[in-house]
Image (cartoon, rainbow, N blue to C red):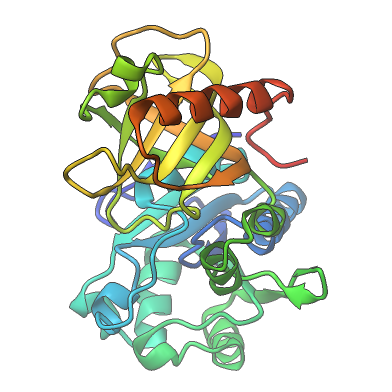
Length: 317
């Protein structure tokens, strides 16, 4: 699939005569529920021959609306650019979420953006969708606006997994509770951590296990601290490996690091973009009395990880 990211409303092309099938949302995590919405957009475009447009926001709306209660992100905007094309084919309009946008009424948002600039003919949204000032753009309100401005509203029902609705909130809680494998099931794909390779303290190389340290987004929700099997994409290559997330007790900075030791890989990739996928939790983070004890444990971790094939497809099957 191909998705064209457009970072401002001013840069968005004039709508086609046929119009567009549009969906709007934060889409944090690009989870199974989001994927169902994208599938519905794709199917509707096939039938009507219309353009497909996804409207999303940066930063997360709660940064402006509720700055005291901003969730950590499952998917940063950079990660969305990487992974939305795996599930969505069409234009992706990224709107800067600021006070001006926050204060638009639902009708102002619909008329000035969805109708006038995008040419919406059908709006496909999730069952719990709401936008506009004070989230007044509820499903019933959107249906009224659709009749007024000449577009249909299609509501996608919730997707259930293990008896409960799949949602970004549920996935965040699942990760925070340490149930990483369950979080992957809810997402429907491997969890990705994107950033640039930065210099660490060099301990991994000293121990015989050089690592690529990922400069991840400070808003990124990290999986529980510990050691994982992983695979990574860097410098145009894909490699299996093992990774560590957490506080390295030999690191005087005491910061949470994300670092991956990639198998059969010995390139200088500092400042290169990297995407690391922790595929399986191996063990918790713990403190070692000496570097020798740490080396012995890393050797055991590698043996365990090599017993399984880590590399998977981007899309969970």
